[in-house]
Image (cartoon, rainbow, N blue to C red; front, top):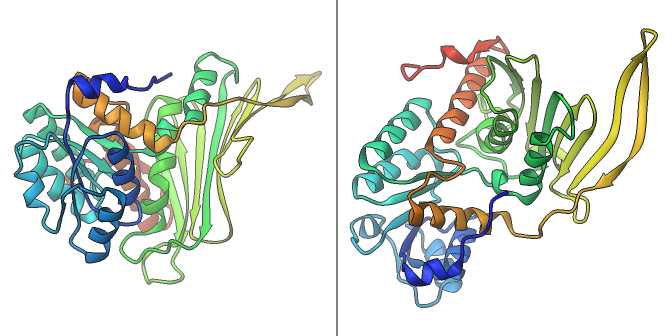
Length: 346
């Protein structure tokens, strides 16, 4: 289990962080880094974003141009919360300026770009972290622990639903907008990339921009995972289910008091007949820490210690590879795609 960074480390080793973007999600990052006492500047080209930054972080310089932060030698790290299509250019420039970088998901919009950023981070010796928020969620951290201990037994399959009515995008489809969270968590829980993926979906609002997708991931062990995302659902749902041959677990991010529930149930064979075993369920207690706060602390910890964070560029590239394989399958009406076929040339 990850532990919080001692705040005394920040006091003894002062750090200055600049946040690029103060929009819908960027403002949450501004709030957290300001509360950690490391926020040195916020940049946003829109007057609305700059106004919000000034409200969240009084006294912190609020700028219109990103290059002012990137060129400032006294700013050690930058956090990029801009539109996904800008991530590659901004992260590249920040790394080349010697900054450690935290990029909101997805790392880039192309697998080849992600590979290039990973190589650049290694070349420059900088930290490159991706904002796969759910990997820092206390419920997911606890679920990983339960699976590692063998509490669920052998994992049979995993499915994840991320549904809502709204947050409709016109620049990226539901797969790229919603599914990075689920792909990242599933890869972490399974511990490897799938061999093959399939993906199908439908475009109902913007032509050729899928509002609904269902992705299937097929792993070497026979395990399968399904990811259903949509912004055209009548209700909101954020649920991950892991089915083992001993127990089953449900992570419901929308539940207030029962975010992680372990079901003591399985199926066994008796004289060639399946028998359902039900032994109740238990709510697994988890820490009340804000996942985003933990994620921000992990970034600062990586900058201080020079140790790769959990969601480093390597894991970010892996998520991109799976998303790109799913996108190819989606464009081919659900044709199976071998993940090994996804190369930088694609």
